[in-house]
Length: 204
Image (cartoon, rainbow, N blue to C red; front, side, top):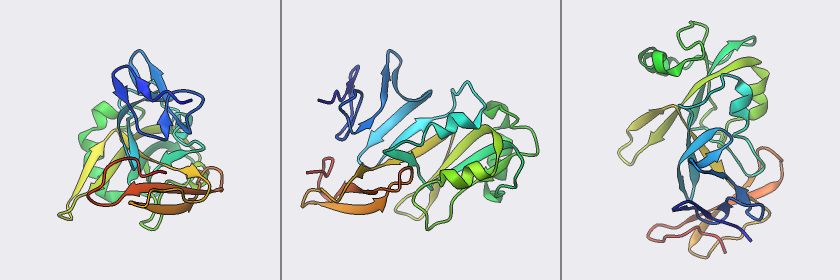
């Protein structure tokens, strides 16, 4: 039994808001959440959460976005503060950091802000590598989205999450299955995505 409704909103299988759901989100009077982060949108290949309203600067707050069934994707660049190990400097984001420094908070005006991002071959942010930077503050995040015109749009203060189910592929004949090892558990897992011109969750 899985409750897929939160107020007037519903989410697709396998997401939901109760103990019987494979990928569980939180439902409150204020809406859908993952930890303290409000869920902006949910679709068949991911979840978008807002980091704008975060009340904590601790990097541990960001680590709550890693679970057994979901994790931040490599589309995200993570802005960090008070790091004892060097993190990658995302020079392309320097202008955005300056422009939005007043709203980011958590030492955003400090010149020691570092940026962490994965290489193009990675599907998700590597939690172990991120922890190895030994940073105290999660400042903000920037998500990049490619469109069909090869343009790149950047969204500030959002994190894109990808989700999966454990086990061997169990997708519809009209869906594409992507096998993977779950980032947080190392177990065999998979994602389903409907083929072009089809709609739905893609699962059997």
